[in-house]
Length: 125
Length: 232
Image (cartoon, rainbow over all chains, first blue to last red; front, side, top):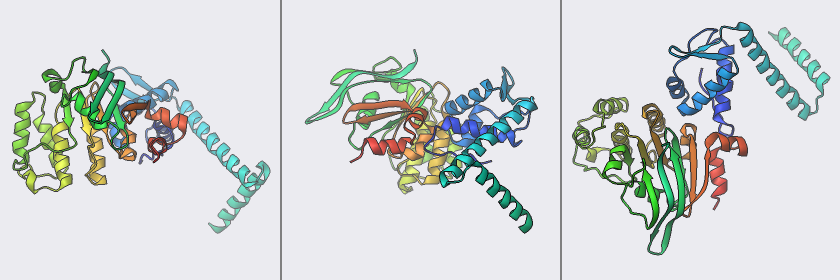
């Protein structure tokens, strides 16, 4: 997966989000070992200190853990990963609802519009 | 001691021009720092003082706790804004030359980087384009295992693809305790790899901050903030 970093937001929080996404989508599966900080930083073309900060944040959130001698791993707790997945989904949906709101659709209208589009897509596909 | 470069009320003036106006600055170890400012703001003067090419009129500049001199040159790897290499020399000769000069010069690292950038070690500098010359100089500078790398406009003349490679080289090659000080106008290209930025204008330090703090507080990139602060 390519790293996509926007220029107007802190790099560190974007790294956190993208690593979360990689874990949730199984690119880094539960229990799997992560590359070294330096390698990950080089891959994303960012400063190793920034990558370190992002990884530490994910560690304190419990999504990653590190073992002193052998490196950093994705948690084996599948529940924890599912929780992250749900959190990310909730963020996306809230964002979507807010944007629809700005367009002038309230929640019910948004949901019915969504349903209609999904139905149409089913018929066309 | 955590700082590698320190300025205390540093003053430098030239006839009719105050280049640095009582600058106080501390650059910590293990950071990649951008020294950013418009033309004529004092960036190169500061860099030259750090390398002992100029002497301060007042105040102090310390590198690793020492005034610039023989001992600091051992730990500082400096890329000047203009080339000082003899253009009749081949890259290979220059690598030997640097190897003789600096104990901490790593030849295999230099050859490795030359290969990655498709530069033939047998070529003479004279026959090279401006961009290739710059690449060679940067390779020589980054092949030293120094504590402080000072790069004055390192990516100005090279194409965007090589720029990416050079930045990757910088983040991949400096050791954890080394500091890299980069002066440049090409902020968009470098801001991803910087820890901290120093804004300098008319000989004064206007701002020192981490890149992520700027993005967090201002909600914009360092490049946009620079354009705002130094709007003409």
